[in-house]
Length: 203
Image 1 (spheres, one colour):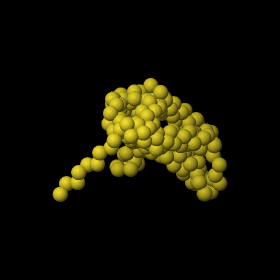
Image 2 (cartoon, rainbow, N blue to C red):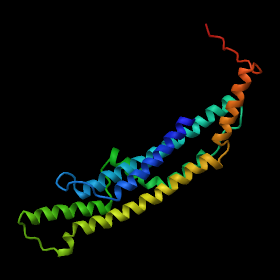
Image 3 (cartoon, rainbow, N blue to C red):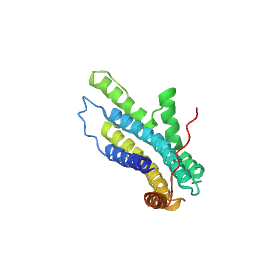
């Protein structure tokens, strides 16, 4: 159960890291374009939303496994939390699934940025393009897209952080209570007040 909690908390920390990655363009433009930086960072974030959902299920299942062993009431919070995850992260998870299993789903601002980069390359190659000068403001378009994606990611991150806090503090049985009960049970076993019986092997 503790390992599962570490993994779900680690996923939230990874989501924070992606927010930091979206906040800056650190690459050589000839090696990694601005649109590719946003595209890959955003797809990583979508994957982390999916991972958070799955790790939340893992925590719940581990909690209930140990609760059954300890003879305490099992948790009942999974359905409500999955509804919250679907409401707040579901769109990102669905886009991730479509990109993996069907056609690529790119954020419209990343798509537009890719088009600007393509048109700029045509213009630099000597093609005459009848487009307003503002269209070729790659840095400006990049910043607009980056800020929008970062704001969206921060909203999803805040929801994931709230879910983790509820698992740790609000939902019964709380992990701290389960650990205390496990320690008490181990102490009773060590003192011989509980005797474990071996299961008979089937012939």
